[in-house]
Length: 384
Image 1 (cartoon, helix red, strand yellow):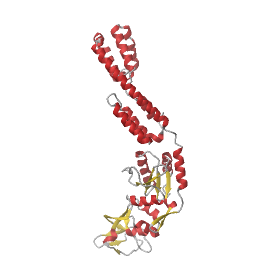
Image 2 (cartoon, one colour):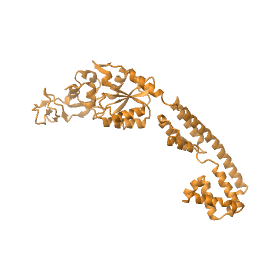
Image 3 (cartoon, one colour):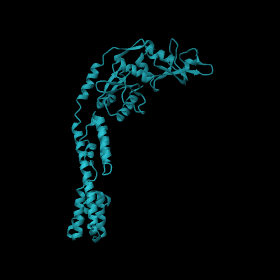
Image 4 (cartoon, helix red, strand yellow):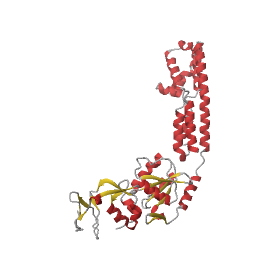
């Protein structure tokens, strides 16, 4: 019944990490058990059922009678005799996956793990190494079926939007959906059973992974440069600084105008015009003001167009609206919208750009210096 090292991991992967009594690990791994044994750790859990150890395996799980410690067959076909167990034999042992993964990764020539762990929701994925050429993470996924593999990969990919190298026990779970996700993320797929074998207590490379790594590196080299996007962001930062100076100048001018009594014209206009005027002043332009006022944009524009014909006070009002429109309201918002819509976004750097958008959208005249520093640090960390 022995299935070998790699199939054993997938057969016992319903739990995370894989776990079973020592008899089952030994039975399934067969000649590869020695390579696994040093990574199996006892837990505080006791087995409620036991594998059939009869020469003619009945194929069912035997119930463990905890009072007498017997393994009792429950099916009608095997006729297996009850087996006396020791307390140590019903202790569940689980795979020390980080240590196992580290040994596997070292055997394949990968470096140590750098910067981070798998998202907690990706319970069947473990970071086990780093590709020294690209600094990409190397992951070990041990799942019992294709749907769980796909689910864990989706969780990891959404949290860490970067190419990675995926190690799996066998190629049996590589479905079209899994392939599509890996191609979209520009990932490498390495089935360990095809490239690594147990050699006593060690692992031995049976097929080199170099061709896979070369394709992986070549795929990363084909990514379009992010330089144009970063240059656009640089221009937006400069625009923010320019706007800050403009806002300060506008504030000073407003205070000066107020001191000169130049807002006295507001007292000479009717209540409707005052309402429209202050809505535009706050919103920044007529389109936004019309939404605040629940009024059609065309209606509001028509009313404003008539102001210049109603005397000096109303003409001053119209001029002030024109001046207010020339002052941009929120720094970087147009650029952020273009990025969000995909017009200027490099999908390979989606996480970086989302962070940049969030920074740009929070710029204002009070926090621009701190935000510039924060954004600069973000870009340095992403491009260093």
